Length: 388
Image (cartoon, rainbow, N blue to C red; front, side, top):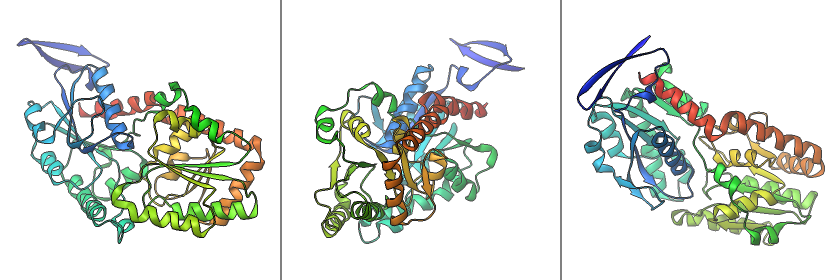
């Protein structure tokens, strides 16, 4: 039996509760700290989702960021976080997604409870010769993983088993580590009407392969394009490849190289780069897609895979980093990064409707069992209960 000491209006009450949990503490203030908060971004969606569930549970919670884009939630300057956390029982949750000296300093200096949510950081080598800014930020961010482990926080949260494994390698105690997948906007996607212009443009008999994610050099676009070119050449000359995702300005040379590759492969009429899309448009792209393919070389979790599972789109992927752990058996996940194997996989699914439907259903069941926002909320509070 636990005894909770709760102070209300300077009166102290001792409450016996056999089901005592951390979330029942009335005095806990929670600060969510991140270097960057924006829209249409998986990490930002996770932070905002975490904010909403903590607020709904009755906690006084605030968002703090160095740089932020308006998204309907008040975001305070990062430097104000120390003034908000006043008690040793308050909690800082620092989201580590890039190199940031201020975040590391705050994590070490504060005298309250501390937690880290580790989103993984792309190895700097992917950006060499493309963007010195990205390369530097990623290199520093990965170097700081060791520093974060040595900060000896009260708990460490990781998007995936893969991310947790990286933390454990740097010295985090296993008893302090918990897998908490990222919150996402699938619930919103389900309720929104799909964009009619996208539906009208792509509904039809042509096989459509979809890839969703930022256009960045770790995402394996060259393998994706090679596989698609082989599929078009050997199996279906009318197929389309839809690449949905933001194209960062600092990575313009990479985007240009992909378009040059498209031209070299004679795919100009078959590959569509959509850029940033609305949620309504994103839903429409999932609805028109026959297959979702991800050839990424490095992912800490990969939320688009969860979106595809929730929308019952069958998945083909390369088994790098966290991808096998996210997809499980609910897709065709290959250890070989072989464009011919990927092309044959597309052909197999395009010709076998029953297997497509079965994989789509398996994906949806995996989403419901492991990755719904309700399940993620339960995992979050299971981890926070270890702060008692």
